[in-house]
Image 1: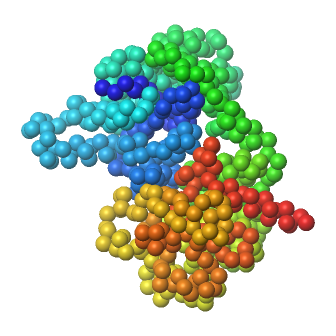
Image 2 (image 1 turned 45 degrees about the vertical axis):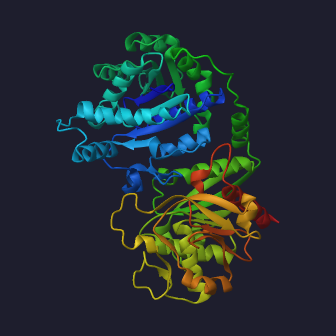
Image 3 (image 1 turned 45 degrees about the horizontal axis):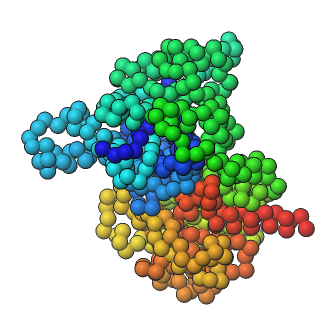
Amino acid sequence: MSAAKYIFVTGGVTSSLGKGIISASLGMLLQARGFKVTIQKFDPYINIDPGTLNPYEHGECYVTNDGAETDLDLGHYERFLNVSTSQANNITTGRIYNNVITKERQGEYLGKTVQVIPHITDEIKRNIYLLGESGEYDFIITEIGGSVGDIESLPFIEAVRQVKWDLGANNALVIHLTLIPYLKAAKELKTKPTQHSVKELLSYGVQPDILVCRTEMPLPQDIRKKLALFCNVHLNSVIEAIDADTIYDVPILMRKERLDERVLSKLKLQSKSEPDLEHWKDFLGKLKNPIEEVTIGLVGKYVTLPDAYKSIVEAFVHAGARNDCRVNLKWISSEEINNETVSTIFKGLDGILVAPGFGERGMEGKIEAIRYIRENKIPFFGICLGMQCAVIEFARHVVGLADASSTELNPKTKHPVIDLMEAQKKITAKGGTMRLGAYACKLKKSSKAAQAYGEGSIHERHRHRYEFNNAYLERIEEAGLKAVGINPDSNLVEVVELKDHPWFIGVQYHPELRSTVMNPHPLFVGFVEASVKYKKSLTV
């Protein structure tokens, strides 16, 4: 068994309380004390991974360096801890059952009747221990998705019970995140939902060690005592998690509540040092006291659910703080953009990002948006499909290929400037079959992209099936849209830039996935800086 300590974060009363943020905040505090920490997410849905889920169902699909399509909470883990996650950091019910059924088909159970206990729970435990077996980490934090009481979560809760029994009290603990609702009419905080949630958890044999209580109002001492008494936890293990202005306040709030100290005490560990939070506090200071302010339009097809673009939103937060600038995002549905509406919709914007996406819906609106941006020299940043739309727009209106399109949009186009990748043409399965994960890119020295990165060789994460068609590269470059980033192995065009424009960059990859609090992504930093300059140029 590994020497790592295991922390489980469960949720009760309702979903969306912020288990991912609490997990990431605790991980960051332990990391700031000198411990090595990783976080994994166990999702109870039956999909193998979120790769085939509509963003409206589950928010964005976060992609790791090793090409795993994962839950968006892994983005929070990376942004807070500034370390990469992998396939092993996100497990679903679908993957667990798929593994067990595969083993059964291969005869690994020697004719035994395959059951939830022990076979499913053993497979869950195997995945829980997997990260700890490397010897690389002091703490493995495991977030259990959903809420206690959900039918699909039961095998995971049983696996947690068994792990606590296997490892003992000094090596594993459970943090239960619940809601303390405030009844306005009665002017009271109510503990009963939390009591019921803990009772439910106890009925599965799991006693929480620490309660983290989401609340709109401060928790008075008498409420804390009541929770401690009826939930059978120590008084100082009742932690207040009051609503914060920003998710980046949560580590500081958890430090004030001494969550990290309680964890170390429960696990009988001495801290390596007091947590060093100076860099984090500097970031918060810049975030909350900006000198500049810009408004950037985010053009996409899933804008009614901001979580569909979660990593982009957070990348703007990081880049804004680096530039001492508040970035206000204006959410724009690409389906509303056409030749008549575009000037009105884009009025007052200092920069525009055209977001990733799939499918035909809203694509023509993105193309029309980019035409307006190009002609009016507004700072532009296109990501994945956004970059592809920039190529299509340029081919149509500058190169003169009126029928230019992507075969995703128009399979019969005469000029497929964006085409299905050769390796994708024989693939019919959807899940996990795109070009996924980190790939190399060589940047041209004179490019704005190279200046932003400060280096010529980069690795960025991808998630796509279609690519720039190199048959049109010469004609498009001659007209002024330059391919300044190329994959050295496949010659795939990764980055395009427009000459004679203040900032016009399209990238095939997803830079937002690599932006963290401590290391804002250089392209987002550069784009925000260009937007500030553009805004100032209008007032001169």
